Length: 430
Image 1 (cartoon, helix red, strand yellow):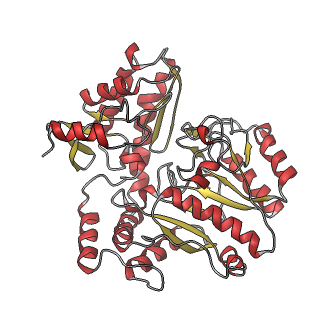
Image 2 (cartoon, helix red, strand yellow; image 1 turned 60 degrees about the vertical axis):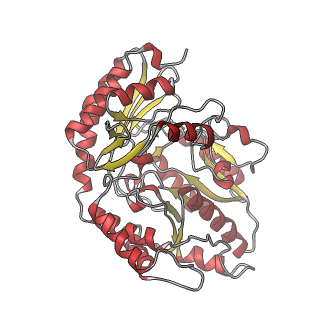
Image 3 (cartoon, one colour; image 1 turned 90 degrees about the vertical axis):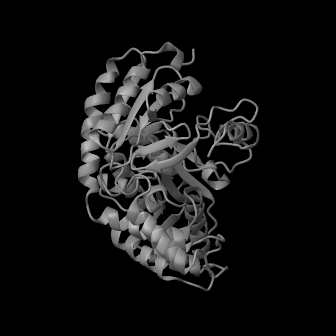
């Protein structure tokens, strides 16, 4: 089913994410997945703590998602979206409009989270063209992450992100100091000063503010105070700026709210969704905006929004997303996420006292251990596999984002593995 020759071929020829082709990190062959477990080619099973990069919120091989996929496949796998619509796209868009803030009523369906961000940024640029202005600057936060395509990279942290080497090739935008007040900290008004100053100085040139609400994900797994987000919304209203909320990682319950913006009681002008949208079954994203933004774009010289991916509104992905959101709407996830949060807090927060740990933090179904030294990825990954878990650390972060359906015993296996990994000096770089 999967031979050593296959592994050798993989190592020699297949480029994996953020991996060197000269000295690639080891890859572990997964041949099946069920519930919260991945099965390796040698029969070992690993409890998945990553939800396949935060997407598989309902676990793997879910019968309802599989059935939705099979039913749609029997009708059609794909049809172009230009000049054509289909029931799955309509049903999905209806659900998204019902679930998101009332003002968001126009839906653009694309094929990945990065493209959702590209679409949102292009919407903002074309919105101002529709108002007879050229605005090409975005205001965002340091320590942020928005994707791997070029416009998305341009609003990732310019110095401390995985995209720092592209400086000079990317447009230069405005970066406010990252929020320092944690989610549960007492609010400090000074935390917002840098953002406010940049907005005041440059608001006539800014096309939009773009940020990850409440949780800065791949830029450091940082949780910031809801009042910061409220201040951003108020400032955008004051200066007439568009607010883009990148909820690709946080959407559909991960932080304990359906959308992270709800922690602050605010709504964006443009909302980016992805990852968990299909329950991790197929790639799909959605960018939602207001009627006012959509109409203004349509008044620009082009007369339409200038974007159209080949696989936009793919029927298979839309059909699975409809069923995934139906599961979300049945309302089991709040109790599931609350139970995960309680168990993560009990298991991880005491590790703040460990000499290898700089900080431990938990929000919803997200648990983070920030270490004092960078992790030795190969050594630590191998340790986790021997412990029967799949955890993918990076930098100084060992974090968990398990499927919502994980059992208490499976989650305990993950947290015990994290705890024990901290005691091994070889798991960290000097």
